[in-house]
Length: 223
Image (cartoon, rainbow, N blue to C red):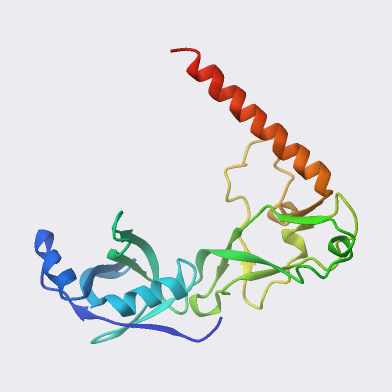
């Protein structure tokens, strides 16, 4: 967990279509809710909201600073489809002493330094994020997956290769696999990155492109 992310908020009295006035004044409307918390409406400076959303995403807790301090996770962000400005933000309040589940990014560490890459092979990331469970202030900004042990084509990095920070655990069986033939596969078996020969990867991409074109032709031929 890096430095604390704080957002200064004020109570919001304006609701419904009238919130457009707030936006013209450079404010973003929002709401805070959660277990044991009576939902309440807020507003905050648009510039601050932009920075907080960019820094926290949906995996880092935010300190809401108003009349009282509240730890919360960003639950949803409504963005204008044309202007790309934030129109509304919803926060889910959490308790500092109770674990939460959040989806955190996975980063490949040592990119370009593995023996496989020095030999001209390609390391391609297959899994971008994973769900973990931890106390809000222990949630990592990202998990590091080491590529240093990759040597030859077919080598791979799995979730099990990631060293978890203290107090952080992986969330098992979160992908609906219960009751399937893959019940013996754990989250640690999930592949984060694979090593490919450049020629084999190019051939696979060409084949996939040909299959898409054939599918599109078949669909258009049915008109």
